[in-house]
Image 1 (cartoon, rainbow, N blue to C red):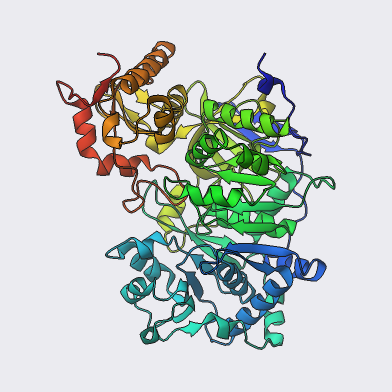
Image 2 (tube, helix red, strand yellow):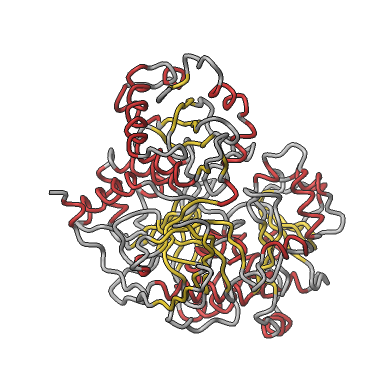
Length: 617
């Protein structure tokens, strides 16, 4: 008997599933929750002010000190004081209506300047640090600055960001730094800003905030086109926060919220859903200095040896590395699961095999399975569209519409639907890009998500929707057959588990489907004793194991859209510098195919080279 499959889930007070569904004559399905959206706050800064009064000494944020290695702490009272002082400084700069751009990553000071900008009614604009630190020409950063035209630019380290600051030109912006001053830049020190005496102007500014006030601009990831600036209003933020708060009811017996989070605040998942949820709860967030990529995830594991979070989120690549570590480290598992209530996966579907490995560890250490509260949204929807708000036996679901969200499911074929949505959490339109805004919405005002979903059980819609890939990533083979990249990719990673860490699907306008693949070094070392990456491409037992797994996959999937003919192993990991892997940790299929065109060509060359794994002729 599989003890994991029969173990109960941790008891979590989830939102009830109660749907209103109407199917139109053309096959379009309209879906919403019958549960009404609960109270919506007036603005985000009000939550910090509330906790500064109600629980002043409770830690809000913690971050490793680069100097000592210990945790720096910012409690709610001190955070409130610093936000008021920084808001006063911003109001005194005579920059009314302009924007505050943040180039550096997550930090205590970054959080303060965000809420200070909101209190001063100056939109906050976080930018992925890679545009400053990894670029040599800073072209994307300059285009963002040209669009936003910031009145002030914040960086954690002036010296680290000096090249970027000089590249964008800062004659018309105030510069603010925390560490490592550069005299020639003429920047203002953070210590000076948070010492600013507060006047009645701050309270007056706060009272002037409305739901229509633009809180921030977020740039889209650019995975499906050029980055666009999304205006995020206080209404969007607070409606989204209310939706997420209704997903799980308050439980007096549950431990207080404690998170260890790495997801960047320049993206909607980390900077809106997660950042706002911990502020709503009055909980504590440890800022993780690790990332779910080889060489960086060790930092996350070290942090998890000290911290027992109540919930945890990552992308599939991060969960794969976590599963590897948990299976080899008993003490880590005991600490990780001690207070765990739920897990969240984002970025892509979690393979079923990986889901099972994680649940095995949960049952081993806790005696219960952990619910995966997968959510689905986008920058344009403020991370609020659908959520899995019940314990489920499978991975890959996107759930059901949250309270206040209307779904419009437009049929693509006999089982898949294109997702469109309407809610108070959705953007009014892209900044200064009216044509893109028109294309983003349909004739009824529903935002086009660009994704496909299927029903888990068409006769039982409350079982939820499952992700069926990005419509823009799908392609045709020479035969005219459509290949569903998202579905195939997850199936391949799952059937070869744990030997492959990730794959990219090839075959657009070509005769058959192929794969560019990255091996899982930990699993391969355990099974085959391999250490040197150069060994993998020609190691017969490893190649045979991959071939056998993919042959079994092909026997289960007889259609040409799912059958894999060849595979090539890539030695170089996906490059964040080249945009192959985002700072959220998932692989950008389009960027990999463009950068590795030579590998794609080799995959289809005749006769195949010795390093090509031929699955079938």
